[in-house]
Every structure is written in C-alpha cells, then in structure tokens.
Image 1 (cartoon, rainbow, N blue to C red):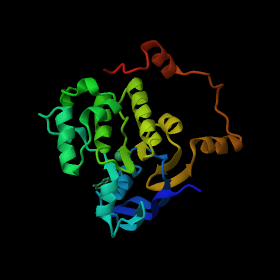
Image 2 (cartoon, helix red, strand yellow):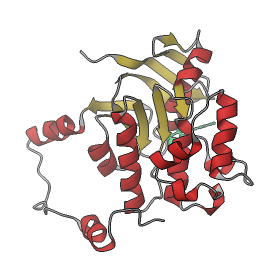
Image 3 (cartoon, rainbow, N blue to C red):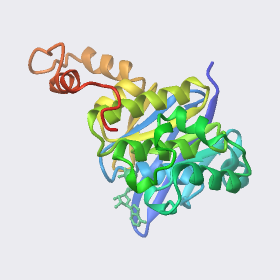
Image 4 (cartoon, rainbow, N blue to C red):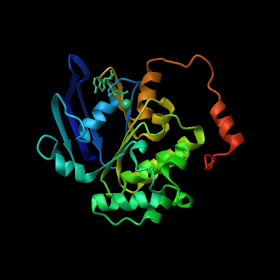
Length: 253
Ligand code: ADP
Ligand code: MG
C-alpha cells in the first residue's frame, strides 16, 4: 500500500460568486510525480496554491504529510518546495549569490555549485537570471525549490512556453528529483507531458476532477470503450523528427 503524503477532501474555492474549485478530493502518494492536467482556468494553480498555504480555501480539508492545513500551516511550509516567479528574483545577483541568499532565508547550507550541477547550470554560476534562456530560467527556478530539502516539490506549469529540448531537459530534472525520493506535484496543460512524465494524473476541468489514474490506465480505459484514433498512429511524430534533426541535449544553451 502506498502512503499518501497529500490528502485533499472536498476542496472548494470561491472568488466572489464564482466557484473556481468545486469540491475536489484526491490523494498524492509519497514519491510519485502527480500531475494536475487541465486547460487554462481549470483551477490548477488555485488548488496548488491552497495546498502550498499561499491562498485561502473556501471549504474542504487538506493534510500535507499528516499536518492539517488549518492547524499547522507553518509545519507544512517547512517541508515543501515552492517555485517563485523568476521575475521576482533580485536582478543584480548572480545564480550563486541568489542561492546563498536563499540559504540564509531557509537557514540552510546547500553548496551552490552542487545545486547548479544538479540542474545543469554550473557554467552559468556567475550569470544573472535575466541572462538565462527560458529553459535555464525554469531549471534555476526548480533548483531554488530544492534548497530547503523539501519532502514535496510544487511545480506550476514549469514547461509552458519551452521548446522541445528544454522541455525534455526539465522532464529529466523532475524525474531525478522524484528518483531521489521527493514527491512532485506538477500542473500542465500538455497532454503528452502528463503521459510521459506523471506517475498518476488528475484531469481537472472547470473546477472538477473528471478522471484520476495512471496515464496508462486512463488510455486503456478509453480503448476498452471501443475508441480508436481516426488514423493509424505512426511510430514517430513531427516533434520526434525535430528532436532527431536538432539534437536532444542542452540545445537551449
Ligand atoms: P489554472 O491554473 O488551471 O489556469 P486558476 O486556478 O488560475 O486556473 O484559475 C481558475 C479560475 O479562477 C479561472 O476562471 C480564473 O479566472 C479564476 N481566478 C483565479 N484567480 C482569481 C482571483 N484572484 N480572483 C478571481 N478569479 C480568479
Ligand atoms: Mg495556472
């Protein structure tokens, strides 16, 4: 039996009269990559930010690592890693200086170069965030979530707007984080990303969870209803052609 590290029960969020999250329930298992997959406006960020203690809920219950959100938000904050908007970083500090600053804020002593190596940014140690490519910015932002050695990392659309190589690099990074034992909860509106990256996916639409399972089982269930794709599926697609032609590794640098 897998242990759940996040439990959400009947979560509701209203903005005025508008119900953005309509009583959703789900569990996230320890050590998995859990995806919240849905279109813009589905309620993904709202849900994530409530669990992160950054937004007030209207009703419902949330537990993170056994801590009740209503009673122990400070305990929850200590064990989670949250991505900040890269625009929020101090513009005049380089990557090493920023990590040192975060070390101070979290009362940690992470070696900046080790952390940069993990996210493949060692050669950018002296660069400022504004000098990084989109993919590099996202990898740095993911790195900053790891400084307090969290049990759970929250990533809100970390690959939106990235090119295919940068997306794959970020997927590798997310898998590395999971493989080290950290639970990852990630939002995306990319179906292919959820399919290849997530261990389990909740499909969320207009504030409701309409399906929740492994990507494999979600697809198998659809196939078992007699569904077939309209034309024969080729063994590769245009994105594969693009990656093959342009190369996979760190092309964004
Ligand atoms: P997603 O992250 O899936 O795109 P959000 O959680 O950001 O969705 O938003 C869900 C719905 O709630 C959207 O219709 C959005 O316009 C609305 N919403 C989000 N934040 C606010 C807010 N602060 N005030 C009013 N409405 C909001
Ligand atoms: Mg969002």
